[in-house]
Length: 368
Figure 1 (cartoon, one colour):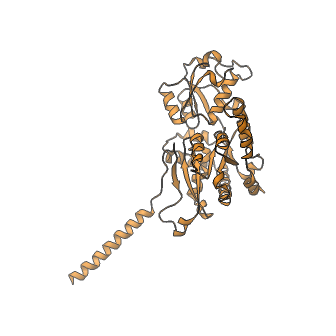
Figure 2: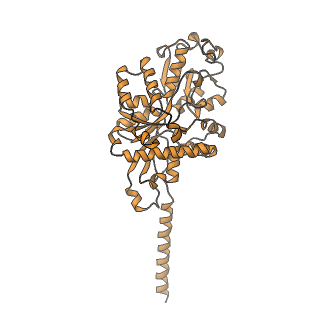
Figure 3: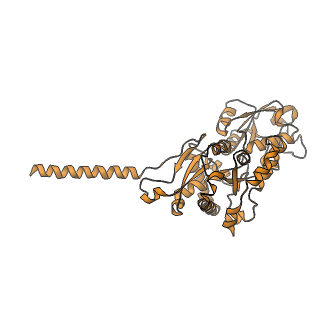
């Protein structure tokens, strides 16, 4: 009788191991890592139904900032799968590399702000919707060190009394920031109002994280930052020299689409926009939820951000369907493009292309 018993026990042990391996596999998920070149995340899990693997994929480009948190929220809720498609994200450090990735046909939709000017002008991106206020409560900032001569001069232009610096203190200085972003617009506006042009300073291209680290280690004279780095700089005692709310800048974060895949994925993109506004409605009704989602979004992308910084960034308004009823799609994109063209950062001949690449058909269908 010993031999049959041993055989039975062996079978039971094999089945137990098989079940254990299956359980371990089903609990795994893809993760998001640093994305200068774009890292990926999928809503797929090991225990999803076989038929879900055949769902069409919407390749979505995002940045670790508040304007993009609707995307991981949608994935977490499983709303994409419920609506017959799967979101696969590529995470970028800013809008500039995201725009460049479009040239390689690496995404179908992406969320960004000022960099969308160059995406529409150079890579034929389509601006299809506005999703949030890109400025918010000090959403971006330009900083100098407390002992900088720039910090000792305020109100040189009496029309803009809150601005620091003048021709003598700023000319020839080195400014660190990622060019082709909203920060470039802020820096240029500031220089203009204190009597300088971009050619009067040394602009060094660095992504926000690198620019912040370099500046705090003593490099450069001026740094332009987005959240959370602008809040960190302020908390470290850096002096904000150009409050964005005082620079006559209006810009929204927008959804851009890949013209190569737009027609074939139009219905999926429409569902995606509806889900973004649905998520924004949840955030509008629950500030704590918005802050928790933003905090998790930073963590999954490798950043630990203080709660008070999260709270300040979360004040930026995420648009709901009711909001976009009163917004002309892409209007702030045109204003930004015209400004860049006026200072020679964009060819005037590109303006018609940008205007032609604004397409509000899906927004009109959603709000009707």
